[in-house]
Image 1: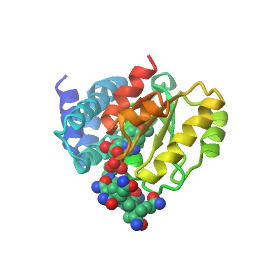
Image 2: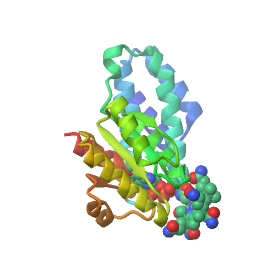
Image 3: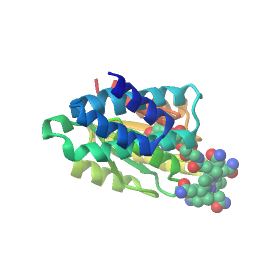
Image 4: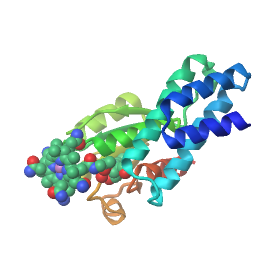
Length: 208
Ligand code: B1M
C-alpha cells in the first residue's frame, strides 16, 4: 500500500531516479505489476491531469511528471503479460497543414501514452488527405487535430470536413491555443479541450 503511494507521489513530483528504485522495491516485495501500473503510475497521471486542468500545475512540471511516468512504464513493460497491456483506445494525432507547432501535440501524445492509450503521431504540417489515409490504415478510435495558428484553423476545418465526408467512425477531437469550444462545434468536431489533462478525460468520456 505504502509503496504504491510512494510511487504515485514520486511521479507527481517528477522524480525519475527514485521512481525506478521504488518500482524495484515494490517488485521485490511481490506487489503485482498491474497494481504498480494502475494504482501507482496511472493514478499519478490522473492527479497531474486534474491539477493541470485547474491550473495548479504548469507545462514544465507536467512534462517532468510525464517523463517520470514514461520511465516507469518503460521499466515495467517487459515485466507485464500481454493481457495486462490492453489499451484504453487507439488515437491518431497530428498538427494540421501549414502548422509547424508541435510542443503541445507532443505533450498530449505523452499524456495519452502514459494514460494507457495507443498513440500514433503523424507529426506536423499534415493535410486532410494524410489524416484520412492514416484513418483507413489504422482505424483508430479517436483522431486528434492540433492547430496553433489562426491561419491553420482553416486546415483543421477542412480536415474534419473530409473525415466526415468519408464517414469515419473515429471520434474527432481538436485543440490548440486559438481553438475554442465554439469553433469546435462550428466545424462539427466531437470534442475540444484546452489542455492535455482535459483531452484525456474527454476521450475517456467519448469512448464510453
Ligand atoms: Co509560433 N506562434 N509561430 N512558434 N509560437 C504562436 C502560436 C503565437 C501565438 C505567438 C504570438 O504571436 N503571440 C503566434 C500565432 C498567432 C495566431 O495565429 N493567433 C505564432 C506565430 C505567428 C508563429 C509564426 C507565424 C511566426 C513567424 O514565423 N512569423 C511561425 C509559424 C510557423 C508555422 O507553424 N508555419 C511560428 C513558429 C514558431 C516556432 C517554430 C518558433 C515555435 C514552435 C516550435 C515547436 O512547436 N516545435 C513557436 C512557438 C514555440 C510558439 C509559442 C511561443 C509557444 C507555443 C507552445 O509550444 N506552447 C506560441 C505563443 C504562445 O502560445 N505563448 C506561438 C506550449 C504548448 C504546451 O502549448 O501548443 O498551446 P500549446 O498546447 C496546449 C493546448 O493548446 C492544448 O494542450 C496543450 C497542452 O496544454 N492542445 C490540445 C494543443 N493541441 C491540442 C490538441 C488536442 C487537445 C488539446 O486534441 C487533439
